[in-house]
Length: 116
Image 1 (cartoon, rainbow, N blue to C red):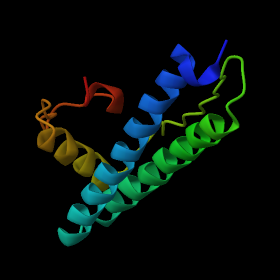
Image 2 (cartoon, one colour):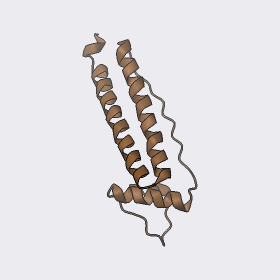
Image 3 (cartoon, rainbow, N blue to C red):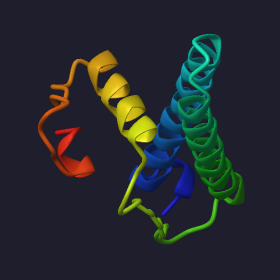
Image 4 (cartoon, rainbow, N blue to C red):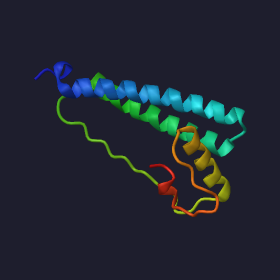
C-alpha cells in the first residue's frame, strides 16, 4: 500500500495541522496572559505551546519518512495533587474565560472539577 495515499498519512497530516494551530493559539494566550501580568498562567501556556510544537515535529518527521505501519505515541501527563490559592485563582480565571462554570470561593472542589 502506498503510504502517501493511506488513511494513516491523511490522519497524520490533519494531526500535524491541528498541533501547529494549537501551538499558535497557546502562544497567543501566553501573550495575553503576560499583558495582564498573569505570569503563572503565561508559563503554563508557553509550556503547553512547546508540547504542541514537539507533537507537530513528531508528526512531520513521520510524514517525511513515508514509511509503513502504525504510529504509536506515548503521552505522559502529570497533574498536581495540590495547588496554591493563587494557582487555583488562575485556573478559575481560565475556566471563566473559556465559559466554564467557576468554583465559588466558599466551596471546596477538587481541581479536576473546575473544568468539566
